[in-house]
Image (cartoon, rainbow, N blue to C red; front, top):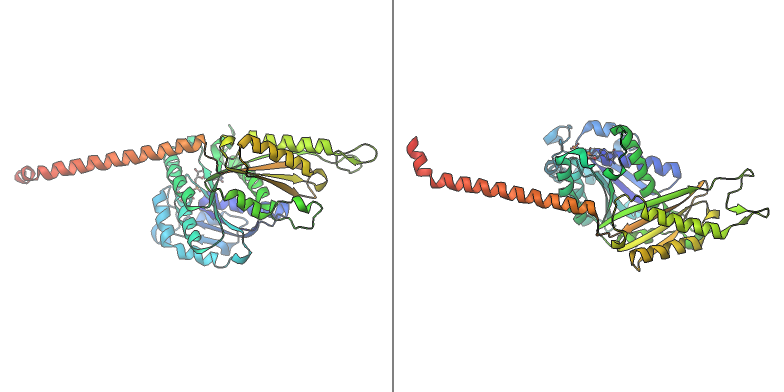
Length: 388
Ligand SMILES: Nc1nc2c(ncn2[C@@H]2O[C@H](COP(=O)(O)OP(=O)(O)OP(=O)(O)O)[C@@H](O)[C@H]2O)c(=O)[nH]1
């Protein structure tokens, strides 16, 4: 599917930068345009693939290019004020070619977590295409302010987009890894999973397996459940044998081993679903799902996807599980991407909601105490006056 990617804040910009690299690496064709928005000049300079004229600096009047320092209310405020600057960049996007917008942001900081929901709301009032969000949750040990920002931003972002795809940094961090190395690896995991999904809707029909190729409308229908989505992915190398033939061709007569290709795909779909999701959840709580089989066309068979799809139907109890192929001629891996949409039983989200509620209660208590103190001061005003 053709997307306009908008990276908001440092993390959002870096991930969009990587999406561009991945799209050209796999010849995916899913990036129609890519824009980076930030309050920090240095973060915009650090990007490698987003063209310079697609980088938008906002909030100059308030923060002068220095970022908002994890203040997400300020991030939201400067976005509201400078929305025309962003709109000016979006005006250059050939929107008639677009299937959807994707706004990407780290939810723990200030710029992306505050600005992304404001932009999503703006886009939805102007365009007819769906507006999706890709939200990156902070690791647990990043500190209270990051968790609080994420808790607040998550609630707003999920309300303002047609579907919020989520990646939880906490689940994907490795111990002993430097932050820089960690993000490079994590960003690769992000763009591989989401990139394969989006690119799958871009295969031209007329291919060998054209009837079963995933269409962008299937991705859109799956995401139209709204709410929150997560992705699983599993792959296996099929390589080539010494004659340069793919390894599913067995025996002297090079017959395609249909049975093993079917079993492989079924087990990849299970691994993708039951392994590490971008946002861990109870799979049974998904409203809709999509299974995409990727790899060399010779290794993809309709039966494998169908079996995987049926298995996911049973696992989720949903009747809205779609499935299809994404044939990739030059790939030596066969893989399964599983999109679970409208998931409701998500432990991390419950914890974030709790944090948001507690923060609201604390703020209410602070306000109530301040009001009480003020009332006491007013009550004792006469006595105070007498003291002076
Ligand atoms: N996956 C991923 N997450 C990142 C990366 N860089 C930062 N983060 C996450 O994003 C959050 C911080 O958001 P940033 O994007 O750095 O902040 P910002 O939106 O630029 O806002 P300010 O810096 O406060 O102006 C942190 O909680 C990290 O978890 C990255 O390269 N990849």
